[in-house]
Image 1 (cartoon, rainbow, N blue to C red):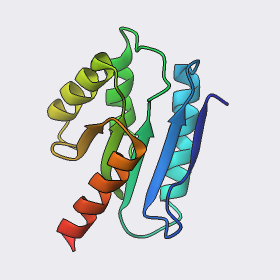
Image 2: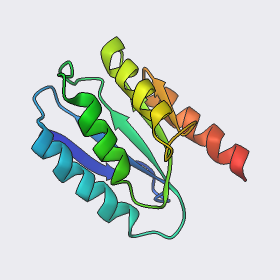
Image 3: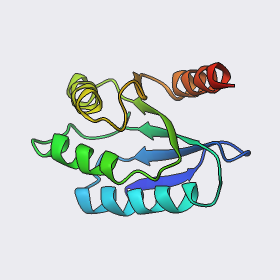
Length: 128
């Protein structure tokens, strides 16, 4: 599968999605279902790392699918860190997260997995 979903932390406070170059929107939806399944295994908030660092450039339907993705998030989704160096992906994430009431101020765009983990750790620390 071109999108892998797994726990990023042993304490199950973060899920990570890793996108290969050649993923498609059907795989995107299947990955979303797996994210929801994992998040449903725990009671508290679960952060999400979306690693698009190897992804192909997005096409014109990206905003539509991203909004559907956000609308389908489980209720316990925490902060979302999107890993990318592609300006188009960063712009789509920024636009959709500003327009969606579910994730205003709840998403960050970073360039590395280490940055994503640091952002999530800082957010968790600020909420405690």
